[in-house]
Length: 242
Image 1 (cartoon, helix red, strand yellow):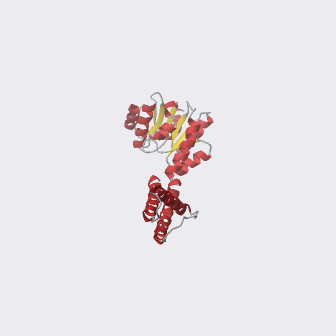
Image 2: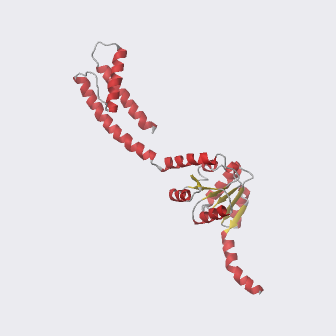
Image 3: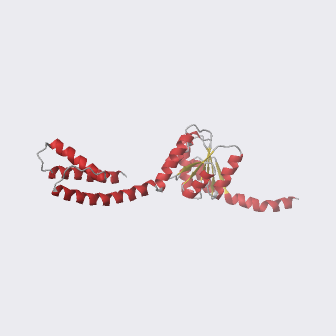
């Protein structure tokens, strides 16, 4: 954005300088500069009202006008793309959330609003907990926001500010539902460094990974395969006891 604006300002300066150089009148330099700035601004704003121009100045302004049309089209398309980009969308959404989160404390942060994350958020909300959702996916973040949740649009574990925006330093618990094992470890390390007393719950693929996560600061690591195995065997185990 700065490059686009800078390019337009440089072109405006060149237009002004060219008009000053081409001014063959006997006016003092400051008057020539004032006249050049006036005509250059009139060209940019398309207001008209140019002061008297000779042929060389008219030819120069015509060439400058063409340049401004090209640069103006480029600037409009570039700035429109920037202002509608995902990065700017996330920035605006996070700024809104910052104001809401300023006084928030003792809340629960849930990372990921996929199938598992939604179940976790629903259960926490039913239990009366204040929940903040962090998700990097545009659609999932929008869905969480539509359902009335506080949402931070960002990639926790990669973008450290996502956890900071969620006020991890004042949270009481963090639940990580992402499947990426490296992100789980990164998130755990960052969150624990920000808040050493934070309760961190997440899933692990095996006992070795669970131990690694616990060393990184996790309070509870659930091995999903063990839970599934227990659920599958439980009916038979009860039958055997009977």
